[in-house]
Length: 173
Ligand SMILES: [Zn+2]
Image (cartoon, rainbow, N blue to C red; front, top):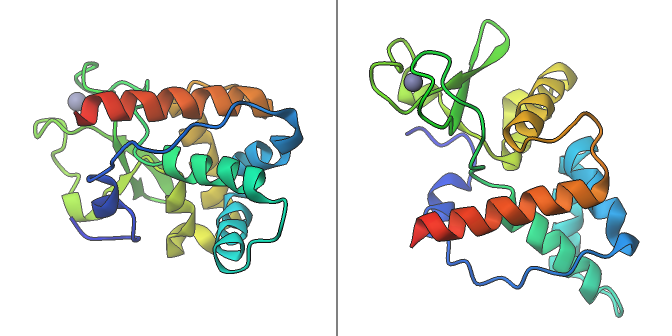
């Protein structure tokens, strides 16, 4: 699989050892950024890594949890062809994002080197980082994958990511 960004191979070796922070409304801004500006959230994480300030540890725990739980979503989307397999990938076709099933029969015409994982870090891939329209489409796809409504409240984003993280840890065993 062609690597569009740096996370897909790393995530396959997920260790599931992070401590999930308890939901706290003081960190709502972190969960708001997941959908409204994921790139800003990723930049915040970099800054914390390089120069953490006193008293910011709790905030960093929430950012760290978000970044570790929003890869390879175990989506609730089903394949438009076989209606069975859970969609884990998508591709860009004629400027639209098209969900792609893992079943080879459904995959015809969907080359593996064009696949993107259902992960928030796809926002950093060049095709998305530079296009507001693509970011909008990706936002909608990921929101649907997590079963969230439009403009979800921060606590719902937290619950959905927590569930995704727990499910992905169970399936990794
Ligand atoms: Zn299928």
